[in-house]
Length: 201
Image 1 (cartoon, rainbow, N blue to C red):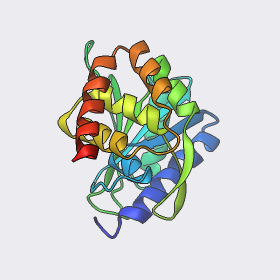
Image 2: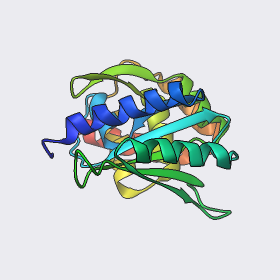
Image 3: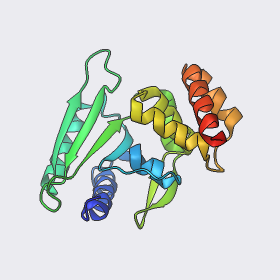
């Protein structure tokens, strides 16, 4: 992992917090991805910084807010770019933040919440110590749902690892109900069987 990784993560969090305050628009965000998996006790190498965020009004529908937030980030030494997905894109809106001045080559992807359960997940996020800083991280159940919804190969491996050594915060019955509600129960059951196999071996 790059030695600049921890200070870049701290700078990004401070930038989003400052933007929320100075732009007078609540921006709620939490860590997702490999860093979030590591925060819940699963050894996971990563070079990525990934957040999920939401705002009021939502950046999904408010172009003025998107432009204002991009301008704020650009003025603070970053290069920000909004990436809009197509009609059926599983990620309709992503903010890429390149931390260009201080930490060359490091960037973060901020997935904007676009489903009701994702917004609820942000409200349930928990402050954890991540690389020496208190950062909101998705609750492990919500992190599992996010990864099942994405369903990439690494996402499913992360889910299996989280289920093989589950944090005490995971309530399996509640997780199954949530997965059923968002229509990814079969995939969860597949990962549970795989995790059980790893535990037995």
